[in-house]
Image (cartoon, rainbow, N blue to C red; front, side):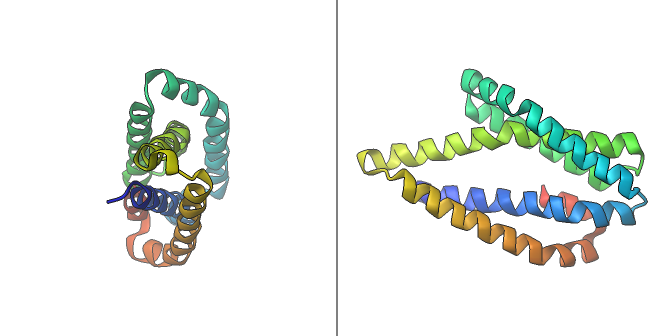
Length: 168
């Protein structure tokens, strides 16, 4: 499989999972007994951690390797989704799940982009066109957001809190 196709698949799956998480978290957690105040606080924790750790995790990825950062981030996000999908409705547990998701997203965001961009550049050599690369991967990302938005209703109706496990 060509590097661009791999990048599109990875970008699409990541976009789908992130969008399912963002859209489904509120109704699913509320149905499980979590207050909207706790859910809102959870999103605040997630995005605060994401903003605070974006630069440090980028430096970490530059020093120790983008692949390690992406793997660690994926593990943190998976742990988060398991906590949210299988855990109790206790405030500390819900907030921990959101916090882990934010930290994991921070580790993955730049590292994954660097890995995919580098693989494409290596494969295409001097013929590499970064504008074409970003255009093609972003089209897939946007399409994955649309598919996730449409499918959230079905996922949450059939899977409830298990939707978090599907997003992982």
